[in-house]
Amino acid sequence: MSRRDVRVNVLVWRPRDPSAPADLSYGWPRVLQVRSTGTPWQLPGVLLRPGEGIMSAAGRAAYALGLELPPVHRALTLDQRPAAAGEPEQLVIIVDGGWTDGDDVHATDHSTSPCPHDCQHERRWASAENLADEIGTTTALSAALGKTPAFVVGRGGAAP
Image (cartoon, rainbow, N blue to C red; front, top):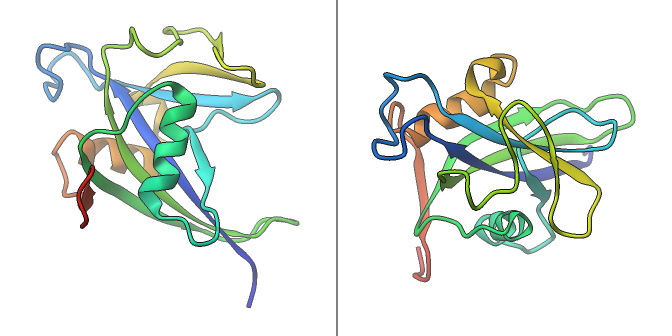
């Protein structure tokens, strides 16, 4: 059996109108992306540790951003990615990281900003329209906005 990594990504989005977060009349929300120097932009995430729960891993990723997960824990999408040259197969789970007005995330539109923690990655708010090649991300964003179903995997502080 080939090796498989399970990656848990957190979708954090910023609506165009914070007073009506699911209103798309002003356009799709922006999505928080991160990258290390020289790597492609992607959703923030972590590899699942042996024996670790999905929401625990999502909590680690949110903590690294200085955020907390919403009280209702939802897995928005699952994406199986085949092994690439020298890399294992990946199962990517995108979890709802909730929406923010952006003031609590150190990133700006159309530019990058360094991480406030002592680490080597940058952050940016990406236009959702530019995520067309990221099928899992656009599907997850649609689910987060309530346009397609999501899977509830637990509620914060309570056993599923």
